[in-house]
Length: 304
Ligand code: NAD
Image (tube, rainbow, N blue to C red):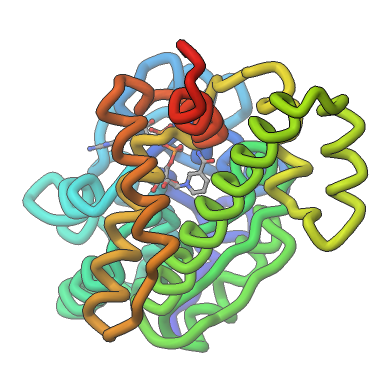
């Protein structure tokens, strides 16, 4: 097992963070607050400036970010982005140190994670897939659920890092298992949002006080983290992301494919996947996934 304590801080590994978006920015900042030295790279200059202002180091390329890192963490949108940053002469595998640990926290296909772990092994780089749930608020508050796939020893080494980012941290099985569990997570979240959206339209059309109704519903068996986190989005029609419909469309594709591969039927998930796709086709892909409410409103005759 390689030594991860190579940074200027005697007990904490030096971290490279690739992908400083809605999730990556607050997560990397939580590592800085926990005392880690973080060097980051992302495509937007304002996000690099934000990292530097938080006490991190902005790098000019992936190669520059990862060359001295003990741990490389990636948080980019989808499988093609993970492949683009990992492979090729400018990618992580060519430029990170042998012995480094690569933790991909993006939500991608399980097969992409399995392939990445295999390719990295040839370079002496260990890999964990570690997608998260909890949304932007969970990232900011460091209360994410982190579902991990990979080797036990690598998980044990990464645990202190995960503890600075989340609260529920579970090794789910070998490479790709974290992504499989995340796919199930996205199925549950989408169906839950859809059910909440349908309830909101039904309650409003029935003339009930929506605020009061959602509060009492959330105290019973219908309650959920979705209802807690998204109640204000529904009440105020505030669909600023958050978690974009575009990304949930990607995740519904992942879970649909993965379920087909193992012969699992997802009848309700298939319908909700179509509703997400429809919302996206109508130009709402950049909105928060609570905008599924707009799809239900349109189906119910509203001009939104
Ligand atoms: P985002 O679009 O806000 O951020 C993605 C970041 O990746 C951007 O800053 C972009 O610059 C960077 N990136 C893309 N290609 C790159 C490249 N070639 N080199 C360097 N940087 C590159 O996305 P997000 O909402 O932060 O989501 C990231 C991942 O986390 C996705 O897989 C998403 O499904 C997952 N996720 C998001 C949420 C959420 O609520 N937003 C919650 C859980 C999981």
